[in-house]
Structures are given as structure tokens and as C-alpha cells.
Length: 214
DNA sequence: TAGGCCATCTGGTCCT
DNA sequence: AGGACCAGATGGCCTA
Image 1: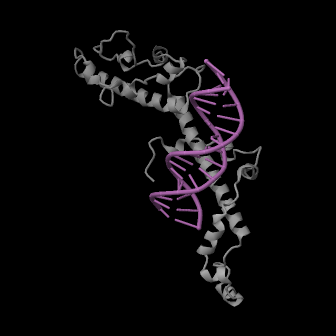
Image 2 (image 1 turned 90 degrees about the vertical axis):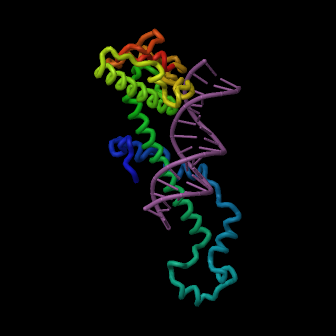
């Protein structure tokens, strides 16, 4: 598997994610939702097994075949399916917990106030996306001012990703602006390197105008 | 109460 | 064969 940009190994997996259901066992969960195998399974089992088994193979033949290939009873098959499903559910649960841990880690590095409502998943992703873009633009502007202090950066050059349409990028801080719990300017107080200007101009070296991103 | 968000289960598909 | 990943379904919780 290719190395993950987020650095999967650094993601903390909490104990409770490893054993998430201390209260109710998986068996309880499964038993409450488990749906019995479909009636068609019986037919399939028969077709999967050797035709002779369905027509009544002699005991001698079955005995000679040995334990491994011995066709399992309906009960055993059902047990096996249930066991596999249970294991798959556990893995899926852990996988989602890992995903949520990574999202939490991402939330942790995004500039929000402690009393802000927790960003939803989609908000976190959009915010991170736009935040990275904003930081990238800041670096670009910093480069411009480094090589030429008098240099100004036209708005067109700063154009937002995706061709400058406001589509995706209209959502910079949208999570919070939509929720009303975090304004762009408020969050930017935590960015020492970033300055906010109410002016529509993009010509302030080193000062990205976040209102242009909105 | 409707709508949004979330966790979980589940079956399908692809890969090793 | 078994694991990872994905998307749909479902039900619970919370808030406007």
C-alpha cells in the first residue's frame, strides 16, 4: 500500500476504538439485527457442492473424501457466515474509528476556537482544503515580496483553485460561516502570519485578503 | 417534528 | 480465502 499522506502510523487509535463495545457485545448487536440467510442459499449450497452430494452420494465416497472437503451442514455454514460477518463488522468498525481519529487529528490542527462547535466531517475536509490553499497563497505572496518588495500580486494571479470560480472555494471557512460559529476574521487572529483586509485589493504583499476567498 | 449528522451493519467488489 | 474499501440502509441523537 502506498504511504499515506496523513501518515497513518501517527494516527492514535484509542483503546476504546479497539474494543468499542464494552457494554453490548457484538453478539448482542448481531443478534438484534442479524437477518437469517436467504431461502435461495439452500439451492446455492447444493449447487456449490458436488452434484453427487445432492443426489445422495454413498457413504463410502464421502468418507474417502476426508474432512477438509466434506460439505458443511446448513448449521455449520450459517455459523461460519455469521462468524465471518461478525469479523468483517469488527474490522469495518475499527476502520471507521481510524478514519474518525484521523479526522479528529485534522480538526486539531485547524484554527478554530475551543468553544466553537465541533466541525462536522464534511466541514473539516472543506475547511482543511481551503486552509491549505490559503497558506499556499501566503507562501506565494511571501516569495513575491522576498524577491521584490515592491512587487504586488494581482488578484488574477492569486486565483482560487479550480479556475477561480467561487464554487468550491466559496466554502473557505464556510463550515463555520455557515454555522455562524467562526468568522474568517476571528479564526485568522490565530494566524500570526496572515493579515485580513476588508479591502478588495489583493495588492498587499504578505497580506492575503481572505475576503477575496469567500 | 423535520432535517442534519453520525455510528453501525451489510453486501458487493477488488486486491493480495 | 480473507482483508480493505465502498456505498446504501437503518436507527439514534440533537437542534432549530
